[in-house]
Amino acid sequence: MESMRIRPSQFFDSQQPPANLQDIKTRINSFVEKHAKVPGRRIVLVTSGGTTVPLEAQTVRFIDNFSAGTRGSISTEYFLEHGYAVIFLHRQYSLLPYSRHYSHSKNCFLDFMKPDGNGGITVAPQYTPAMLQVLEKYNSVKQQGLLELVSFVDVNEYLFLLREISCSLAKIQERAMFYLAAAVSDFYIPMGKMVQHKIQSGEGALHLELDQVPKILSPLVKEWAPRAFVVSFKLETDPSILISKAKTALARYSHQAVIGNILSTRKHHVILITNQEEKDIRLTKEEQDLGVEIEGSFIHELIERQDRWVAAAAAVEK
Ligand code: 9Z3
Image (cartoon, rainbow, N blue to C red; front, side):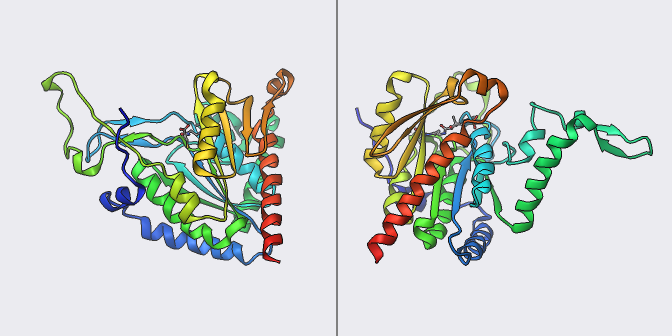
């Protein structure tokens, strides 16, 4: 039986906006206005990390969606290298551009340090060249104000922030790109049905009923930012359904591109799907061993397609 899915407008009418929404709106509007004045400057919204679904209003327990924020944080660095300004809407404490090279379980930053012999600390010489490169890029981005960080934890916050940022980005029309790599919950507990306090364990098995999250790409593409270039991600674990699911999404929302990936191979294989093509993008074994990042390959493909999108819009306007 097909279940009833709430419409996006009903969702926003019945849920509580995040307390800091107004502050974020002000910050994003001024970021967009500043970069809109730079001729040809593009702005991309990169979403990254997984959204949670709280089970209690005063949250002790929650359901999470898988994503470390690797895709989003790496991609942000590539967009910045291509001259984009980036709004990085990410799960709190997930990987961040630049610091990702030295954070989380991969590397402990302390391993890169050594005492300098004079009561101070220095970077161990074997790590200095690579760290200097990252530091220079990071400082240059910071100094030019090209990166705006906004964080979320749960799916409710994510959706309100996405709507706010979309409406702000709509002002720059085709110069805006949406790159929706965050792993967004498909199910949630509406505020009206959520218990206030911690669920007690003395009452036996826990039975949960989760409602469906509204399909947010629909208003994003049709109402909030109809002239922007929109890329969504499709994550599956069963390779036999990936392409058909990605194509269905493209047909349903009429946006510009879907990047399909399989959980276990996502770091070295993606499929780029547009209305005109279905392109397999893979890293060779040697590239994987050398630490090549697949985002470097498909982001420039997306940028080329946005170039054509911008040119086509300009031609219509003439
Ligand atoms: C993705 O498919 C991302 O590539 C990953 C990245 C979440 C796999 P990591 O951060 O992982 O590198 O660890 N994101 C989209 C996932 C998603 O929720 N897509 C929805 C769906 O598949 C559609 S918008 O239904």
